[in-house]
Image (cartoon, rainbow, N blue to C red; front, top):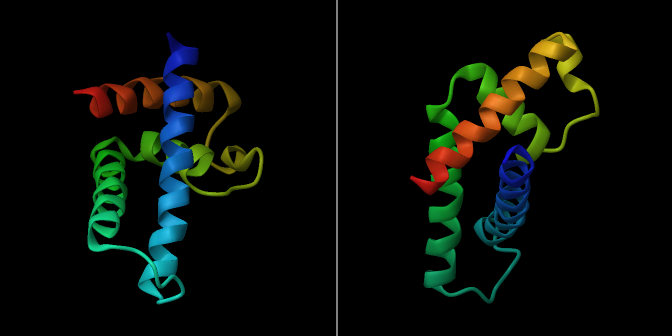
Length: 103
């Protein structure tokens, strides 16, 4: 179950980052061909993920953002958590995020 949930988070994060880049480009008028429906859908997806992350406890949101939704260095967490605490919170964060997405 945990691996399935992690795969879901990875897939959603990949889409999120792609849309975020596209939305940024559109917002800065670098992409000229995009209809309002596409823009609205991209914005809604990004906003939904951001709201879910904001609803999680701070430690869980920090881990998900840094591990999946933004580009961070490997082992970034060492300044914040012990390895065992990081993996425990990460596991809980993944499960809670997927629960929120599928609710």
